[in-house]
Amino acid sequence: MDAKNKIAYSVYLPPDLHAKLKALAKTRRSSEMVRNAITMILEGNDAYKSGYNQALRDAIDALNTFEDLNSVSIWGNSLGKSSISKLEALKK
Image (cartoon, rainbow, N blue to C red; front, side):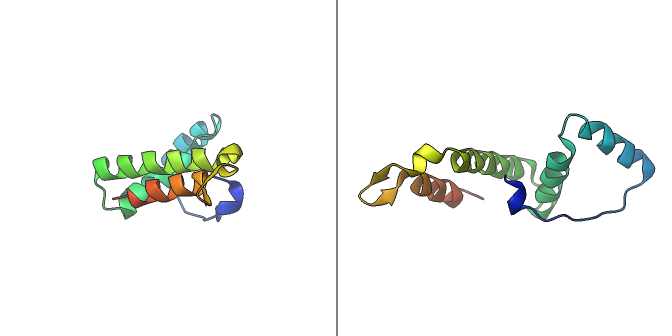
């Protein structure tokens, strides 16, 4: 996911959680972990559904970074955009 597609959001954390999150930041995984947790909660806290949807989001993000895919068209439809549309339709 591009930084330009994100909006900063502030949240207050207890010191122990802040320390754990800061440790994750060293491997550049803290923001992703927080986004995934928030998404899981907002989607109904169903681990299977959240994991499934996260996999679809990851696949869509991967396709969005593959610029060559959008240069291929079949019957006037971009292969990249068609693929992303099909994946988005699978979200639960």
